[in-house]
Each structure stands twice: as structure tokens, then as C-alpha cells.
Length: 242
Image 1 (cartoon, rainbow, N blue to C red):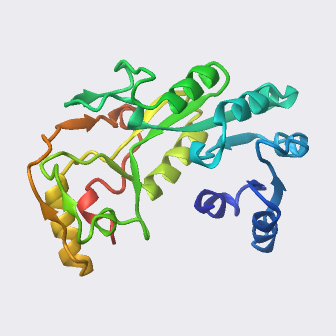
Image 2: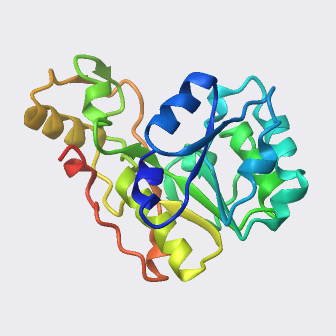
């Protein structure tokens, strides 16, 4: 929705809704909206009559995500869309310590749904954004661990501010960029550093920490898009609560 709000002054926006209530909510905000679910495809003609398409449906909202993507991508109008974006996840990369960029090997072991989704769509879409942990606005990392026990506090975080995801989309549109890109802030504080600082600033009850689980120095490298001229506005996850 935030992407739609950002683009609405320059583009005519259509939104896919998961039910009639969401459709009416979208229309009350001034957007054209149609119901699209794994059981309802009658509005695909209208939705795919567009210049840019953003596929950002969370797999968790579906009983079976892959047949939905197949139905969508095999529609005759799909190939007529000028530019198609698919929002994926950096959870595709192994959980072990290491630095992972777009050339790093991925397997179905880490995230089988996104792995199969990318495999199916890779030759059909123009841009795949693999997003790190999405934060910003009311999504504050420390809020989710307040007053809990964190057993891997020395592990590094991989987060991206949602504003930078929107900016990356606009950058790709304006510069006609194609390919697979990680979206991840360039700084990677430890969980302990992040949670303690944010809890102090936001007045949350801080978590407790133990070394029960071995920490991982797993770093997602988001520089590929930067090398094309993109600049992250939010570089440090410590500041994402502002």
C-alpha cells in the first residue's frame, strides 16, 4: 500500500485485494481495485492490463502459493506487461556464517517456497528483489523481542528499511534496470547492539541475552544495486525506528 501511495501522483494504480472488504477499502482510498486470490482469477484481464506489475503476495497468505504464480504467469496478458517485479527474500541464502551476494548458491533447503517461485518466474519477470528483514515505520525490530530471551545476541542482523525498498523500485523503473538484487542496509549490528539501543530509545522492556545458541556472522551484501547508482537512505538498522 505504501508503494501505491508513493506512486499514485504519477501513475494510475490498480491494486489486487484478497477479499471484498479489502477491495472496498482500496477504493475508498481512491485506487482501482480487484479481488485476486488462489480461487478467484476472473479479474486477471483487468489487473494485467498495465505497464508495471508488482508481485508482492506473501506466500504465507496462500494454501499453495506456486499454483497461484503459475496461473498468474501463464495468463496471455502477462507477457505484454512492460516490466514485472517479483519481491522475494534473502531467507533463500544459507543460514551459516558468510557473505552472500546474488551469485551465491541457493537451494530449496533454506526457503523452498521462494526457491521454487524464483525458479518458476526467473525467465518471466524483469526484476527480482530479495529483501532482507523489512523494517521501518511501526516495524521496529526490538518490539518483537521485548521482554524475551534472545539466545544468539552476537549474530548480525540483515535489515532493510521499507522506504528504501520503495526507492529501489522507483530507481529500477526510472533506469530500466533488470536482474536479481539483494535489498539490505549496508550496516549489520549485532542483535544485542540493536535491541538494547532501540529498547532504550523507544522505552521498551529490553530482552535478556544468553549464548545458548552459537552466533552467526551471516551478512547479506546489498551492493549490487548501489553499484548501478542506487544509494540507501537508511544505512544503519539502529536508526530504523525514527
